[in-house]
Length: 147
Image 1 (cartoon, one colour):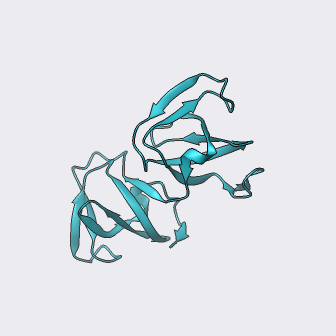
Image 2: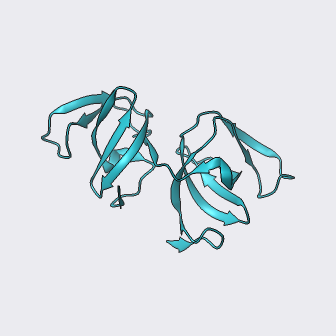
């Protein structure tokens, strides 16, 4: 982990998209062409570099580009196992594989990551609130802890 020369925060780090329309550019200036556009607020992305007020980000599919820093939020979100072929993954009422099921979520569902203890994360969303194994989320690092 490096420290970002502009923000003083770790690189890489996960953040989320603040706006429902985020232009991703090929380089860190407004003169660079737009590579693609995100259209879902809250999507988790990983900051991989900083240049002035620009941040290079990567998404769960590996697409990369530069965005203006104020379009990103420190709010932590995650996608449920976007790589998974399972129909649904278990959300438990508390941390632990033996805990009662609270819900089942399909891969790629967007969740709020409320806290992680290094092995389990408490996630919330529309109509669910519970715990999922940390390694089943894209948007948090293995072993990362926060609340």
